[in-house]
Length: 223
Image (cartoon, rainbow, N blue to C red; front, side):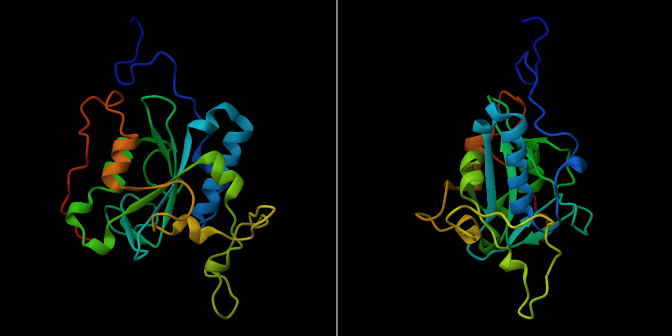
């Protein structure tokens, strides 16, 4: 078809859900709330697209997950090891992109490129660093997520990191359920649990980047 994009196979451009990353609500070390705010923004400005948005928690049983290309990383490849991280995936058709306010990659980045550079592969990592993913529809996250931020308070009552300047997020029935999202035990919490390979199966869209492999190749980069 004349004028059709070879990369995406679509005439219609992908909806730009957000302005520049610098214009989004952001507080360092509060990724779970940053992503909630992104979902709220989508619901307000692009309501029909919310059904195509997914909140993804990255963690594991050891609460120790390596991620590359993160702005907080000090090494050349921007490696960090966090207890958990949260991203937003927008997948309206055969295209899927990732919005991550902590990433050194573009905002957004095609899922395949983001996953290859950020997650790489579990095959070269010790078992305690293998990543798991809790995928939750954005609409559910907006309705159900709550955090009183107690995980960021030291025993002496001081903040580990300065909290956002807005009130804690809560629901009519819950003040805090963050652990139910971070917990990677099956049979509990919201959404579905996926391995890295399953995440690729769910969101990798071959038609978007025809030369992209189906699964990530291991890169022997030490952590």
